[in-house]
Amino acid sequence: MQNGYSSVRCEADIQKTYTVKDLRYIAGHSIGIIAVDLKYPKLPGNVVNATTYPFPVLYKKVEFKIEQLFEGDETLKQTIIDAAKQLQKEGVRAVVGACGFFANFQKDVADALEIPAFLSSMIQLPMIKTGLKTGKKIGIITASGNDITDKMLLEMGVQPQDCYIEDIGSKEGFQTIRYEYEYLDNESVSKTVVDAAKNLVEKHDDVGAILLECSDIPPYAYMVQEAVGLPVFDFITMINWAHHATTQKPYFGYF
Image 1 (cartoon, helix red, strand yellow):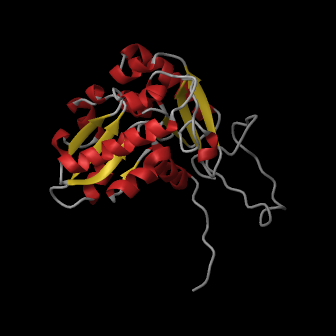
Image 2 (cartoon, one colour; image 1 turned 180 degrees about the horizontal axis):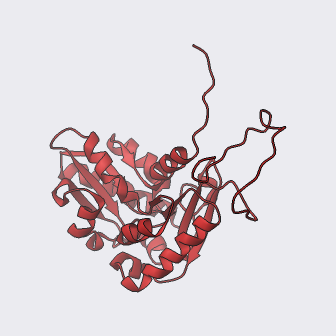
């Protein structure tokens, strides 16, 4: 065991005796997710639908208005840090948020923890930019375009001029999510997301990849890719990356 990490392969290790630091009532969750208490149907693929993942995740609910998160309301900072610390205490190996605008508190939470924090899908921006041909830019589809500021993009590691912002939060087809309806108009939401991607590439022929900021729209990532033929990044690409980095396994095969 190093830095609190340990792994067990039951057949190979059946005769061993284990001593575990910081015994807990649960175990085996690699990813902890801070989720705002928003009530509307969540499809598989949504960050807060646990069936999205082929590995266990652990959720921690926080209660405040989503608009406060969009705006980066400083009064939320301690609530978010406390939630992250609770997830750390319960044994997760990395903490993420369930909204791209947790980016407003990325540094605060990362500095407060002993494990990594990847709070926003937008932390992938510099990696995406690095992989693109010179001159290519990133199209960001977001639930609140006005709240993706130049300051936020710079803190996420990219130049504002390297990104195009496409807002869907004000679109009628996104309202069942944006305003917490008791039903999900899946056809309208999917059309809104796909149309946003099409609009990005029609307006800008230098878009080299799409990033879905919002934690509610990964269910439509494959539709976006089919429509525009570009790499599509979202919360799930980030969470899978964080999971695999914190739960490395041996390889088996032939050579």
